Image (cartoon, rainbow, N blue to C red):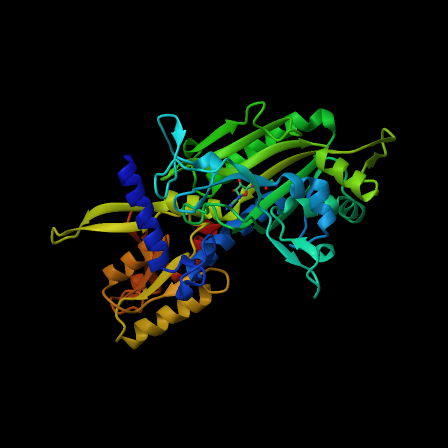
Length: 453
Ligand code: GAP
């Protein structure tokens, strides 16, 4: 696909997200705020489905992984010990011509020299480190003693609670602690919609193991994470596994993979899987003076566990789901008229709405009451959308555009007006193929629950 068609595709996705209630600009009525987004009714369902499935895969399906929900603001000492206060920065340059600020490592170049992406000037300051952590104060006094940071990653809460979780969960090495939560980074240039924002969510695991098992466990996590993306509808062929070469990895990491997705704006990082050695626990043990080692009963050995960390972005994965699902196809109706059908081909388990429920006609009380009865019997276990307005074809299209995998139409056969053989059956329409079949109302719920599981 050409650059133009890729940016047009991205524009269409962003526009659909706004039009149909997936993502809005934060504080939009006041002109927005760069790098902040709100998820609308459908976006919040999509994101919830993603987080729930991650939790199920990572925590519920593993008896060696437990959860944590740490606070966003922690003692400043955490960020000193982790190295964030000193080094969590991006190189920043100022453009002397138009006074804009940019990330030095993301500047466009021409003839070997960088230039300002805003005004094309080459009059740029030398790069300097800009710390990405948002600052605030805990308590009423705004002084250095009360300075706190909004966490830039969820991981550190896991490291500093390692001992408490170990002591209370009766886990043994190897085991993991998982967390989903907000993180904040004062990105110099937020961009590409929800891809790089200043407030986002992470889904992270810190998996603690013996040093000799670290590299093998890293490979297992790589495979597991690739399977996860496949199971939410992102094929392996679209995920690039990039091993970070020596010299580019964090100094404490023995091996790191980035999983990158083919976004319309380029192949970009979705998740990092890092072998962080014993760096974090060692740092926190040293700085806090509290032992964070592990005693192995069988061997009577005491050691600081090594850590494998799969760290994924909720917002980036949500964007990847939207990009992967977005499609336009030309369809022709029975009268020979062609039109473009816009649809989101979400995997049913990710789709915000699982099933549209449509009475064929809204002025037929028997159809309406039967449709409402079916909708309420599904609601609670399944996100359904009841719609009685407009021609049935239009109603199908509206659900296609938000990625609803199934549509159920309640018609005259359902209420037995054409004889008993089809009574209490409905038309089930499949979004992707547009094929329709008859299904008994009694079987509908179990069919849908199975399809979206
Ligand atoms: N604990 C390790 C860690 O935080 P990271 O590579 O900096 O590693 C992990 O972040 C993931 O968090 C990224 O792969 C990405 O999905 C997401 N992420 C990082 N910065 C982001 C941002 N500014 N906006 C949206 N997602 C971001």
